[in-house]
Image 1 (cartoon, rainbow, N blue to C red):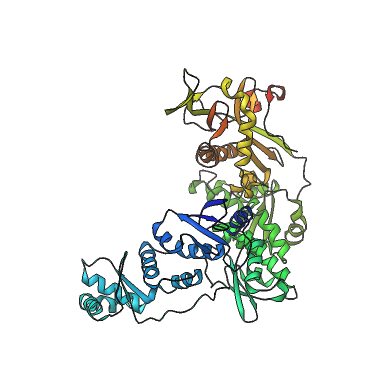
Image 2 (image 1 turned 90 degrees about the vertical axis):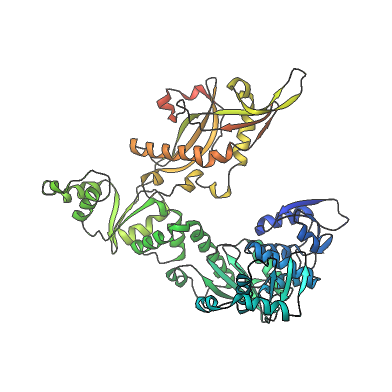
Length: 554
């Protein structure tokens, strides 16, 4: 919901922001507006696009954290539940944000009727709301029409609101929120919910979390330090083996920091948590530090569960991996064991208790654990190399200068030539830099490459840029390599980059205007025409002295 807030009613500085929002972003806004961290009212609600919301809080003081929490509650509501919330607020006239938050937990105490067309359905809805949980058979057998008419005739609490007729049922409202410590409520996907407890009062944080979330939890508990709290893991989605690795004698600060780091890694894995658990089964890490190291390089491993000998590995690669066209009639002519021996001799692999594992990477920090647990010796890192892959750009604008020297908008985009945009290379580079996300700091767009293969090990990082090659401005993917790519690996990374410029990074970037002296321009690293290509400098026959501009990497 868009809400315009200020620090106070007489303040001229305001911001219109979308609630709910992440705590880090909210704190940046608070810092900008001078809003202090407190449990007291600390902001002024000036306006909103939602008239129903304005009827409750327009031109009133509120606590910005309570406002954000209430909007998190709204985020889970159906349209019907939001209507009921506003109807109850109209009828009960809550005086504080705390009352509104409590109201959001007590919707089951009321029924809202704004459609009298189907009394049977209406009665069943009323019955289900009051009972909260009903067996399907019981609800099916209920005479909904009779029940609805009974409620309408005999319920003396009926109130007419702008949203329909509101009825109070037999459920009694509860005070869930005490005005200081927020009730347990998971707004987004988390790996663990942590209860911080002090003097019989509890505040919950949801991992992974930012430092500001911990600071606010302490503020709401009225304590200065984490050491003043007890820590309990309320619930979690972390593997038991990982939790058991956290030393029992760690301080609460160390324990929370460890849980947060681990949660951050596991939330990033998303659907690959099961794969990572398999990886742990093969390598058997013994400490949290080893877990974190493995998580950083998890996509550099390839696992073959259940394969315990050379011949089985050779047979799998030839007949089941899909790399070869295999005919069962040729089995007696194929030396599976020999093929397995040759393949293993050319890769970093070993047999574990769970099967066969291959490491495609170059992370020297893994040397000890791989050497001690599997006997895999990582080769010394070679000096990293840079490789550039070039592609044509399409530059468009929706503005043009007319005969009178004024800029006017166009209904259709106008494609610009290189000679018109060559002098704006710095503006384009700045736009690319602004488009980078925090998750892309270490590996660039390789952050999204989830294949378990040698490409993941050899390509440390790649990012997009632009460069003048001769008299033409080209898009370029700048790769940092741990080792040279063979032809198969080069094709695979080209395919990945093509996917990013056509449907991933490039799709978003081409929609962001770049301000220049000739008006806003839009740049596409991709087009569906036959003239599009992605080629290395070698394939294009260009040398370094033909290249100007681009991002400089240290």
